[in-house]
Length: 577
Image 1 (tube, rainbow, N blue to C red):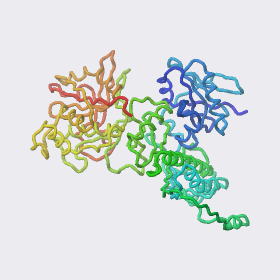
Image 2 (image 1 turned 180 degrees about the vertical axis):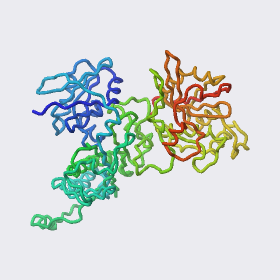
Image 3 (image 1 turned 90 degrees about the vertical axis):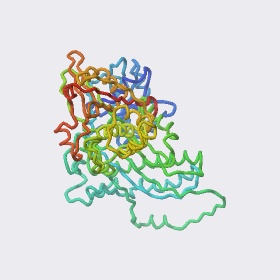
Image 4 (image 1 turned 90 degrees about the horizontal axis):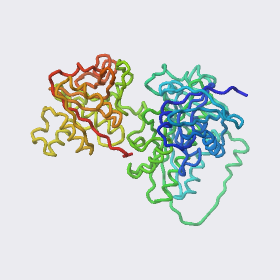
């Protein structure tokens, strides 16, 4: 019998288990390779998600059921849940992992031959998990003419599904000009020196970047020819069947867009089978979406679209298919089920379209940097750091080919704040221009009409007015009579980042900045502020921005000693997903 694997549990999985109510049970999902089991996700068993397939359809292929958990003190409850899941699946788990989490204490066990024994585990950060895997995004597109019934949809997709099952497909990796053909024959062509026995990591051009996921694009192609043996000739003998009845059909564009998570040391020859498996999963999601639509409104069938999400602090991609014509409001119930299924609180949106993961080929070149503060340390001894939650874009002077040098710093801080609400899915409005901000203030009567097109400053109060008018977001205003007094706000700012997590605009004297974090030692009083400086006028060069201190931790001496400061703390809507 093989030896038990080393166990790594993602930090965010542990955090979510500790936040769940008592008595919750569910499954564990992860990846096993090279003698290591990496636990990346949880699936909570509910009436809406009674089977393991309900979870696996939303995660990358090669992520599988690996155990069960309970937030009660009886690990047997985790065993029972796992047993139910494994009976419903076709897979087999060699070393089922059982977790019990009681009063913030997590214990791990293996289930071997019906007996439960304790096991040690280590935690894994997102960066550690990202460094172990390579992700493949597989795309395909085809058109079906289907009868607008659930059976009609199933029949129309069956032909395409059979081609995948019969290995009548090939996969092109454009970045490598590599063709993969035949899940059983493991044929590889197109790149000299790359064979089926090479490791997946050999397909990368460079070493892994700790800030990024290594993602390779793959396109699936149908074979245009087929070996014409005796069986093939017999199979194409004409057979006509005439059925007289009336029915409705629809012409539907099917777009497959699926993810696979593959260990870096896996063999290239295994890829074709992995990618085929992910396409089959995508077809099931397409069928599920179309079947649901024809059962409710067959007159208005909309093409289903796949979205991939990587929730904040998570290492596991979660995918969802939404009908193209459905509004975010109509998709709320589907998003709620994703939150509940994967153990995410219902206090903020995670699965709105605008929050989908932006793959390298989708990112605008030359645009504002996203989260340039990541990786910076404050240096506060034994301090407690509280920073912005989620994503934002860094806005500063001279962006968008617009010269606001010397007067537009508060406008840029406001743009950063709006970008946060947009990237977190709270709004779909674009980041406003200086002119749009000025027009908003004129419209509500705060400024005269001559303000539009001027180079006049705005402050924290105007920022709060615009946020409320454009986004419906309320703000809290704090004041400090001196720069030194800003340091006394450490506890209040830390609480803001822990509860709301939004960027803060601060204005004093003739300058405005954006605060995106504080690190505070309550015993010594030492405090540092994580600052985005909107006065930067250069290009989007992360090395320059961080090394020159345009984004960085600043002590209390950063604030002008005799200046009066106003701070605008935007409050995020609670419970709006």
